[in-house]
Length: 78
Image (cartoon, rainbow, N blue to C red; front, side):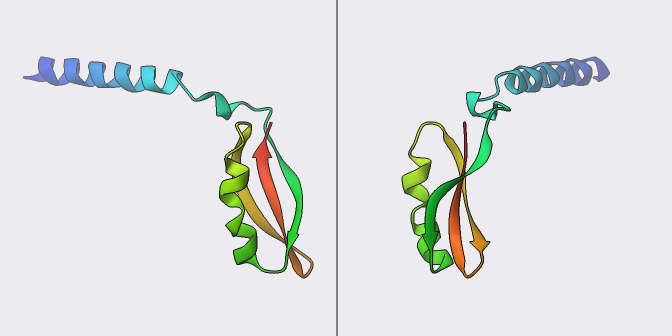
């Protein structure tokens, strides 16, 4: 019984290791947060453009940040 558990643990560990080795390309360390150049009067309007920016192939994340009385769009891109 112990031998089967050890073998199963080894197989599971190898599977997890193999999955971890195949990280997506967007995890590259060259990506940085960059402003979109767009400013909005409300946060909801800023978030409404999220899908537009995320549709670009080099954009991995989108955020809206407070900038004075306005909200600015930021993308995590390379």
